Length: 193
Image 1 (cartoon, rainbow, N blue to C red):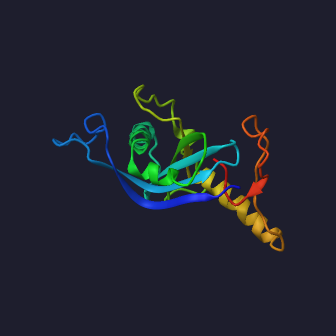
Image 2: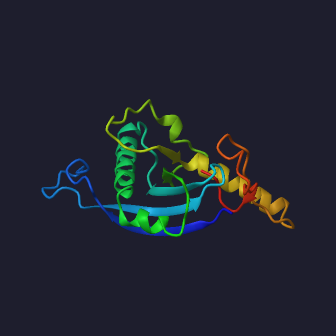
């Protein structure tokens, strides 16, 4: 059964790589990382897997930069560093409590929105092959911009408006990672990442 084990907002975790993650060149090194949102749940797509989703939200009332690579690399680096320290944090151990999963994944999501842009504006289309440092330690990071969040919201709103007499949920497809799961469920309230 898929269930959210933990939902946390605006959490701070201790930095375990103070010098390496010292992006502000502080004399004392980096002390903490902030997590805007954290969701931990049993994955509906990968059997026997606990998924931790570390979310960083960046909002601006300015337009997206014409050349966003520099700011993008800054945001992704910060999120990757947060993920690296989350792996060693007390918070991840708290979220593991009462679970008996053999596998675990930590997924980063960078939500970068602009209220000065049209809702369908794509930041991702403006990126020009940004090159990230090789020493960043993360499994994967997804990017959500105005265009992608608009698609998700519009899709859900169409279902609510046209089919409001029905209960709706997200459909969980068969994948090579969940085919043999005797307890697999095929729909639920969690948007799979």
